[in-house]
Image (cartoon, rainbow, N blue to C red):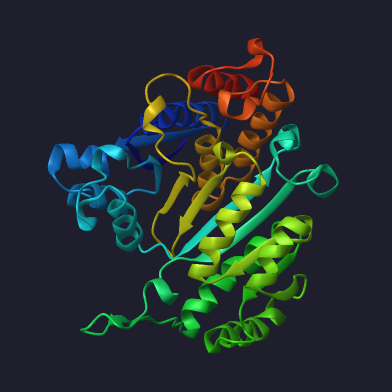
Length: 359
């Protein structure tokens, strides 16, 4: 029986509620397929600030780096809004990404057909569901480039800068992801204006012959933003820079109409991956059995697939979620107006339903 070490970071708000259910699903997978998952719970975010005064204690980062994967709930909340920037809960996320050396964010924008009524797009555009994977560079570009400001505050600047190795590792992940999906990858840039974007295209053209089955296309970021609402079904994998990926992944999450269903993974080369739902900590419903655990459960599927190469187990979780939705079960956030009350369940029941569907 294989044993995998997973560091769990419940964090703040609904984080503990959803991590609990996700671990229950993982245990069910372990029982069914003969794996053993060992969890080590660590502090980060507001919970860590309250106990240690720091958003990311050194021991937390040490434990995460020594694990096979890291599963994060959520961090932050109004309680800590007045703290200085370097002491806010969100600082833990940057610290984790930097300390774990994860440089690529994989964010699926999936609209389950069972939830199509929640999509803000017309049924003829998105009625059959959506499945887009955005591969975003996470540690470079304008967010990490040289920046400055004149002493008199009359001018400020931020620099978009990329090296070939930084681009290559993102594109490699994009190509490999496309090979496992519909074999299409669109590189989103602003190559008509930006020299850094032209470098992205040059590196893509050089790497493309290594993946002859992948259909490669290019699109300017402004057009891509428009196409995501005009014809999102044309996209399979989108590979792009830090800032463009930040903006487009948020847009893509909204067109699915169900932010409580969306998972994410942050990956590096050899170390553990960081997996988390994209939604926030929702402190107003923490501990009330109201949170939707499905995004975290689907993050576990990504964890199994990308960190442990357990594709069959990952697919089992995804199929179980589909079965639960097919049966009409919903948490409050995805139920919609006038949904039958007897089909609306809480956090614990939703976790139990997914486990039942795995049997």
